[in-house]
Image 1 (cartoon, rainbow, N blue to C red):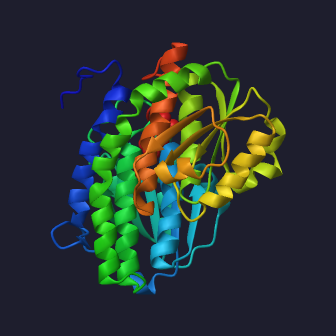
Image 2 (cartoon, rainbow, N blue to C red):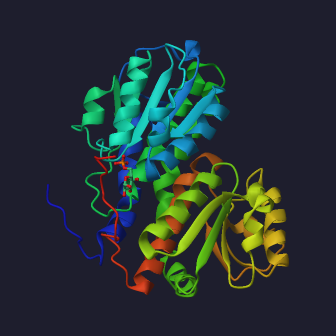
Amino acid sequence: FLVDKGNHKHFMLKEIYEQPEVVARTTAHYLDMANGKVRLPAELPFDWAALPRISIAACGTAYLAGLTAKYWFERFARIQVDIDIASEFRYRETPMVPGGLMIVVSQSGETADTLASLRYAKENGQHVLAVVNVPTSTIARESHIVMPTLAGPEIGVASTKAFTCQLAVLASLAIAAGKARGFISGADEDALVRAMMEAPRYMNEALKQEDHIASIAKGLSKARDVLYLGRGTSYPIAMEGALKLKELSYIHAEGYAAGELKHGPIALIDETMPVIVIAPFDKVYEKTVSNMQEVAARGGQIILVTDEKGAEHAEVETVATIVMPDVPATIAPIVYSVPIQLIAYHTAVEMGTDVDQPRNLAKSVTVE
Ligand code: G6P
């Protein structure tokens, strides 16, 4: 497989720009676009309606894809989801109801803790479904069901296109589960599938913000700490933004549920502290506005990632606003991944760090 950077300065940037294409390829694999239905390529060895519970285990960015999926499975399929970091899950000796579904998410398919979680789940009578980018990997081989992400080889150590493809696969699966369990009508399924089909186009639009984001990154590169806030499915995206920023630029960053602000991180806020708020104009937007007001009252520097309606209703002064296209709620985490990746990328470039090979990190962690 020939892998080069093309015209891009780094593999990471190339992979960020590949996302509309690989997400389109991945959704085309799981969605019957002509008929507005999810079409899972594999026959599932269980009945969604009889499924007692879903568990998810993964590491790093893949874990955050899993956390996003928890919101989708609970909303669309009304099924309880336990999600855990694989290194915790594997040693917790958690009881599992036989016949449940364990989903492991991994780009490489070789992460030691995720593999150990998979084996524990199998020993405890779970159906194991793997969302992996490398179909020949150990995790793929040992799982009962494999749902590949069709992201192609990912070279940048910090995961980008594999993440958005993981989201696309997990959203498709959650819609299928909702339909099979009777919580989603045929018309709802059709609307959701159509929304998913639009994701690549919206991601292309989001990419147009690159120059604006590069100018914002100049200011961010001077920060010591950065806080990311989000609610609902924007919460895992806030965590992913913080993870990317610390991995690439070595600036300390934390992602928090916006509602948790007053239980700790608010103590850190002063006029030197950038606070990046991920907030599409959705049903929790107003709640996030009140959190932004708390930040603004303490002089925090708000960088708001929202859509046009959100920008109109922000009610606070921001140092910058990154305006995303107005997208259906389900695909917001996929589209909003683009600006948070670009923020981390450009801050790192500004600081002169090694974007594709950040210090101390490995692409695939096959040892504990
Ligand atoms: C490493 C990589 C991350 C990745 C994580 C999980 O930490 O640097 O980008 O998210 O491992 O890897 P996996 O291959 O299981 O997705």
